[in-house]
Structures are given as structure tokens and as C-alpha cells.
Figure 1 (tube, rainbow, N blue to C red):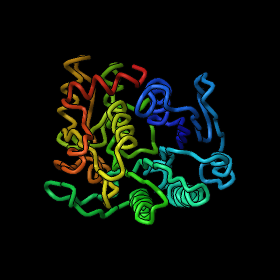
Figure 2 (cartoon, rainbow, N blue to C red):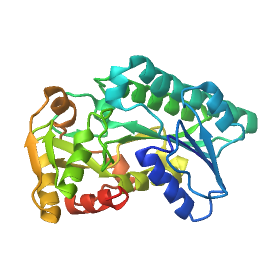
Figure 3 (cartoon, rainbow, N blue to C red):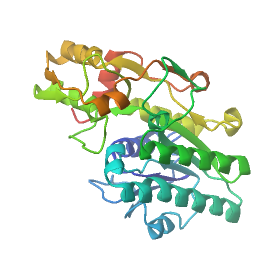
Figure 4 (cartoon, rainbow, N blue to C red):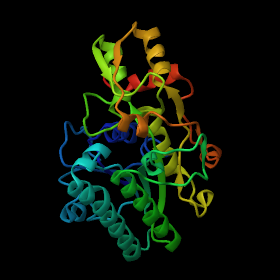
Length: 318
């Protein structure tokens, strides 16, 4: 199986690459070639199956290089984070919108040339839902993105779904929540506070949180995210039917609940709260969310807040 991972050097991408090399998609060894696409690589695993393509995902010639030979499976993770895309509209448009559309177009053309439809797992985002959310959410909740990042992800979902309808793309879009615990401090992610509280708790640092302790968010560890991405790739197309978008189950937890659980493990953290209204609106007022179609297909959340913490630290360098 020839697999392409865009954004392979990112937080989720790097963890996914390690899983593909060790466990494969359906079974160990089923990945015979692994193409990694990103604009830089901190380290490339030493494995004869790997081909690293260094360059800007938004540049068409880089995609031509990555797709010089047909691929069987694509994990499309490359994107400019929401806050960064909002601050630099041209960059966000070029990568998150036009880059994604060009990728899907190239893959559809490949399917027609080689009579072989590739499977595409697209990392969409809960950002498609917007900032004004109902008291409870399910698979019928409509998307009303409030930032360009959410608009771009929603367009990607729709184009991928249309490709599935036309029989040229076997697409599966997952609306992912905040994934923890990212290393370093990322100004590009509006949800960066979700990872920051893990780091400061473990390291005993001071931190000013931009949402209130009662703020509620949707949480998922990187390990759980990777499980769900791989599960999406394994699902038979006929089980998905005409709806190619799923929101995996999440843990809906208050910031205080996570801070308290971290304190039980590491001791009390020195966290102060200075809520920023724009961040609290988008990332701190997320209600209970249950996509029953996703749960029925076998997608899963981390289980408990303690398991979330354990799995979030598992692959995060702590």
C-alpha cells in the first residue's frame, strides 16, 4: 500500500507516521511506501519505505512530485492553524483552501487515469460549527463557521463528498477537536491553552489562561486522534453511505476539571485566569456533542479525564 501523509512533520502527522511504520493501517507491514510531505522536517525516521517530499503544500509543483506515482491512501493533515490563517488571509487561502482543492483534483485525475480510486482521510475541524452553538449537539447540527479556517474545512468536506458521489474519491472527513498536548507554545492555535495547561502542570510553571475555569471544551489526545484517523481509513466505503463526514466522540470537560485532574497527578498548578472573550466564545463554550453515526461506526474518545491525561502525555515528550 502506497500512503501519502501531508503535514507529516506536524504534531499529529509525526505521531501518525510512527504508527504507520510500526502498525500499518490494517496490519503491520501493509504500508509498502510512505510519502511524507511538509515544508520542513525535524527528523525523518530511518526506514526504507519512506520518501520525504520537502516543500510548501500550497505549491502545485510539490504536489506533482508527491503524486508522481499513484497512491492508495492519503491522510490530508496539512493546514495553517486557525488563528494564523485569520491573521494572514492570503496564506490561509493558499494552503487551507486552494492547496486542498488542488490535492483533491490531482487525486481525482489520478483515479480516472489509473482506474483506481484513492482513499482520503481529511482532517477537518469542529471549527466548521462556528462560535454560537446550541445547548446540545449531534450529527444533525448544522455548520456555521465563524472564521475562515472553518470555512475552508467545510469547503474541503463538501468537495471530498462530491468526489465520493462521482466515484472518483473515496473520502472520509473527520471533524477533529482540540488535540492535546502540543509541545511548545503555538500562537497559531486559538485552542493553544488546552495544551498549555498540561505543560505548566507537569513543569510547575506559572500560566495565565485566556479562558475561565468554567469554560467547557472538547478534548482528545493525540493518540486517540491517530486511532480515529486510522479507523477512518479502515472502514469499508459501503458503511459510510452518502454521508462522508463524521465528528468523532469527544470528552466535553471544563478547564477546571482538567486542571484538577492534572493536580492529582502533578500537584497544584500555578494558573491564573484572564478570559479573552473571542477565545472563550470559540473554544470555551462548547456544549455536549454526540455524533451517534460516528459512535456506531466505532470511533471513540479517550474514555475518562484520567485516561485523556495519560494518553496526552504518552506521545508528547513529557
